[in-house]
Image (cartoon, rainbow, N blue to C red; front, side, top):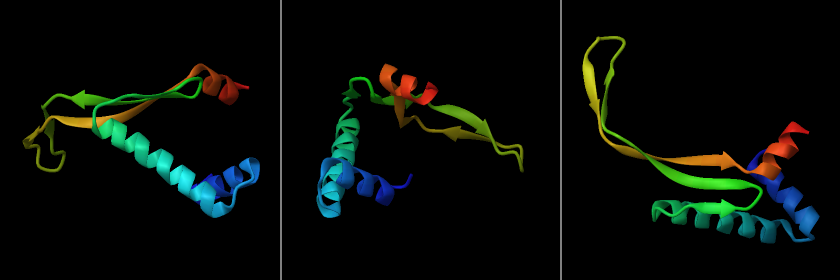
Length: 91
């Protein structure tokens, strides 16, 4: 399911216009990203937890040249599925 299909489903299920559903979904995504940028977790009970994990600086090897390169520390978004989501996926 892509974003436009999700908007259509939400609009139908919540009896909203596609425009209203699109605004709601965009606002949800924006607020999750904003919270993660600020270093906060987003917990949706039963659905899951969005978090930011930090990666340490490290080294990697270029497979074509064999040279070692240094990787700077970085952050990445993570998602851990909640109990209800796991149950829904597993039947």
